[in-house]
Length: 38
Image (cartoon, rainbow, N blue to C red; front, side):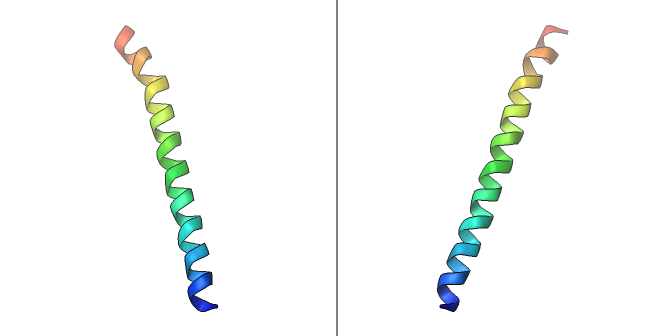
């Protein structure tokens, strides 16, 4: 039971990290073209 809880917790943290990375990448690519124009 303890191991199962730890696995779900790790998976939740992993998903959160992936979500953050995707947001950062998306923000970077939406800002990059604007910087390239100037």
